[in-house]
Amino acid sequence: MIDLTKKQLSKTYSISDRTIELYEQAIDDIKEQFAIYDEIREYNQLKVLSALQAERISDSHFTNSSGYGYGDIGRDSLDKVYARVFNCESALVRPHFVNGTHALGAALFGNLRPGDTMISICGTPYDTLHNVIGISDKKNIGSLREYGVNYKQIDLTSDGGFNFDKIKVELESDKSIKLVHIQRSTGYGWRKALLISDIKEIINFVKNIRPEVICFVDNCYGEFLDTQEPTDVGADLVAGSLIKNIGGGIAPTGGYIAGKEEYVTQASYRLTVPGIGGECGSTFGVMRLLYQGLFLAPQVAIEAVKGALFCARIMELAGFEVLPKYTDKRSDIIQAIKFNDKEKLINFCKGIQLGSPIDSFVQCEPWDMPGYTDQVIMAAGAFIQGSSIELSADAPIREPYIAYLQGGLTFDHAKIGILIALSKVIG
Ligand SMILES: *Cc1c(COP(=O)(O)O)cnc(C)c1O
Image (cartoon, rainbow, N blue to C red; front, side, top):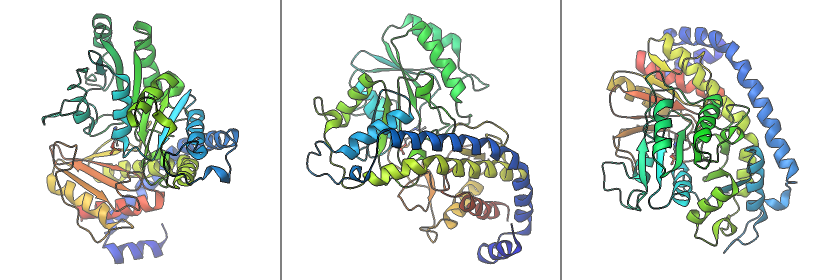
């Protein structure tokens, strides 16, 4: 960092010399790691480029359909581009999914029937899915459980691995198990994201026992962190959000589902209705943004992961426990920092807000968010509301007070935001 930048940082945000010292060391320590991610980015850029070329995407795909949206070639071709990127039969990419939870919910509701059981093998699924499944402490109205779909759960072992023995017993003894739920990213947990190699191993294990069981992966935050996606290693179905990695910071809203055609079609009947599926739905002129976002996504995801890596190292140097560590192989863009202190946690999030391009003048406070059990604080000064591929930090207000940082459309912005946040915590 040149002196001019340092001076400006200390002048504008009162960043201490101590924070700058930690910065210099952290940057030095993480350099080597970056090479790994640069290579992944390069490969994925090629993958996306080839998919766009293979589908012969042109200006005419950036259509603006209305009404029923019959024959919207922009929409239908983007599905094919995604299917190529995910190396699978079919995809459903829609601005009509209001968020990732909606896409995940459509995949689950579309593929499960009364009497079926879904089993999560990574412990408790992401918070917003609790209402979908019917395991929240609220009334669970409209949940899978209310429709007669059972839920079972097997926790990860204490070292973060799968409990293979238990999974085997359940699969062999409970023939009602129709779908295995695998969550790639950490969510609001204290564990590492599942690597593609982990996902491959567990899917092979499941398929060896019960080949007909649907292996479903919540792929939120994981896209483009590896040269392969879960669908490359046997996942039958994946889903995620367009305002995370794969929207490249450009997609204004939406979600996607990808996988075997049969399962994607079932899910599409839940986005719309049986018989209509993905064949209707006008796209309001947003298709170009979804294409362009996908094109930029390999780059943006890696910028974000560099921010996370930097955060891991500098927070560790400042004395906080972090997960993953800067040397760990990553499979999502999340960085968890344990504060063991409510005030420090809140100050960190406020610092991220202060360093945002939008709403930097706003104080974020904990609140009761729809879909979440504990109060949550969310620092998000983003161009797209709630977009977490943009630099953001959030935390459920519960012990041991862990903040989850993610995003950063540019590594430089992530660095600045994190410096401001750290100096809010250590002074
Ligand atoms: C973000 C996320 C979701 C979906 O959240 P939305 O805010 O609804 O997009 C689901 N699972 C995981 C692991 C996530 O990170």
